Each structure stands twice: as C-alpha cells, then as structure tokens.
Length: 80
Image (cartoon, rainbow, N blue to C red):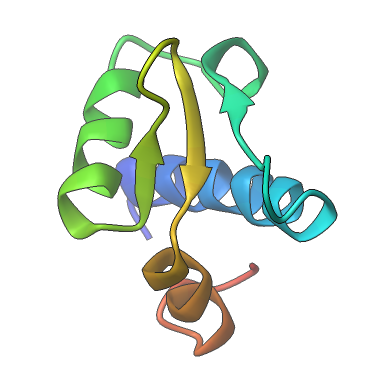
C-alpha cells in the first residue's frame, strides 16, 4: 500500500468512528484529521471524488458517507 492510500485509510478510519459514535452529526473538523504532509488536501479531494466523504457546507469539516461506510465494512478499504 502506498503512502497516499495509507493517508486515505487513516482519514476514513477517523471519520468512520466519528459517524458510528454520532450518526447524525459525525462531522470531524480538518484539524482533528490525520495530517502529516502537504498532500493532505489531495487525500481529501480523492475521497470526495470517490464519494467516500463529504464536506460540511460552512466549515472545514468532513463526514464519511454511506458509500464510505459500505466500502469500509465490505473490505474495499481495510481496517475500518
């Protein structure tokens, strides 16, 4: 697994757990997501394009979508 795939997985894991704990308000602010490089925005953009995450309208918060949850649970993305 390459570094970008690991970053996507780390973000999805955090968002999965947040949504599991707070199904209706499972948004996580960008400051609370794993961020260790300038390619972090690339990670979020790819996850959005895949339909695995969605951004909150008014701030830099993200939530895993139903498609992201299913991808995690069906093993398309490991460790969720």
